[in-house]
Image (cartoon, rainbow, N blue to C red; front, side):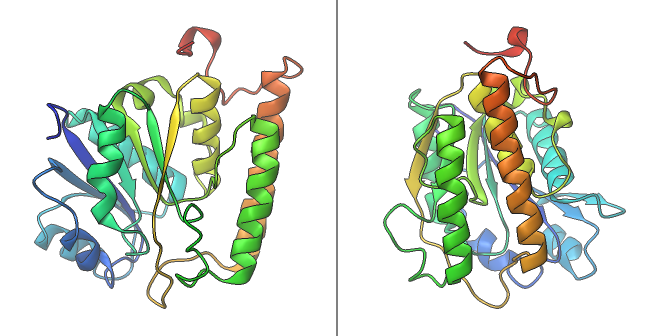
Length: 252
């Protein structure tokens, strides 16, 4: 616990057996009360390894997609009493040692959500981020900031923390089951009036770390731009978007 708040870490996993133990080893168990892994029909040893590590393990019998995996993670964390939920990719690309800092930013009352940014601090390329991923990240983030009215350093991190209140309000079931889920969730939270903080996070790129290929990256990029554009239309009162919270669901 942290200042009386119950902390859960959720790990949306797919074929994460090669990196899971390293990721879990760096999670501070004195702060984190619950570790939840949802396996999206992996074909490696992710599930038995997760169980051996003592994680609360949920198994999708068929592959449902990255977004659907997160939906299961968040629902389980709420059901198990979490006050703050940290979503961390189990591929050891991000530093688990930042969990206490991210949770503290929410406990402080200043933020409802926190994004761990690979861009803040200027170390993404030094950590091995491919140049084309870096360029795409910068380009997409610039457009998203314009359309969403924000100044985030990036929107594409696989490491983020949410207060319970955010997860209870957002209609996550309306979001995609694919990779664009992350951006749609941010759009929902912004539309509902929740506040975001960012924290600099070093990232590691290595062979075992998960990564989508170029073709899926293009599909993701198109989905990101669509999300930002639909948000702008809705926020401007020009065209409603059903995935966004209704006014009665909004915080502000």
